[in-house]
Image 1: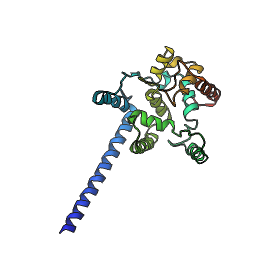
Image 2: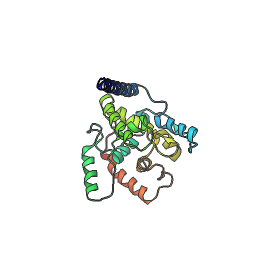
Image 3: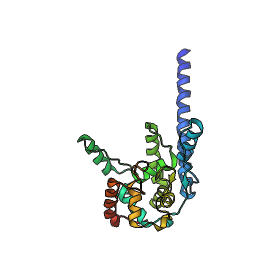
Image 4: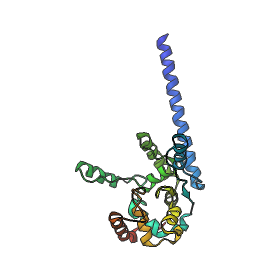
Length: 233
């Protein structure tokens, strides 16, 4: 009798788990499909930061966020971001395995660590996930990356990324970044300004496009040299 009860309970747990997984799959797929056609009025991380402030009194800055279509964002910025963050953006399917190989090689040789996040992966976490550090978030990021590449085309991925990426404290997206750093709209950025904005993306809360240090200026120079070979979507 006890064995039968244990089997029944185990079966119930398994069925509940399967249902939960199917629910999460359907929910995340719905999110990704919806954002193929609808521009998000906010990101999950914007909500997360507000909740942290309300519940735990964490520091909070009302984010500057203004959606712009890809055609209203400077082509220089598009090229600069691709040059800086993901040069194989048009040829991979969400995961840059060539870059991952380089990262693993550098780790084996104890060389300086570099990230392997693609623009698609960064868009996944910018739009759908809070800025927390845990393994589940990385798994969710990978899952959303797969869905995004299946549902969105590359221009839509770049458009969502440029509008939702963190460009500094309280600065969400290209339009807000252009206004804060250069007092102009995102479509009027010069190549030099675009390269500078792209140069600070790895550490937007540490580096500044208003007061760039030698490292950021070197990154800007390298990005400017690479930009002409990058696509405009």
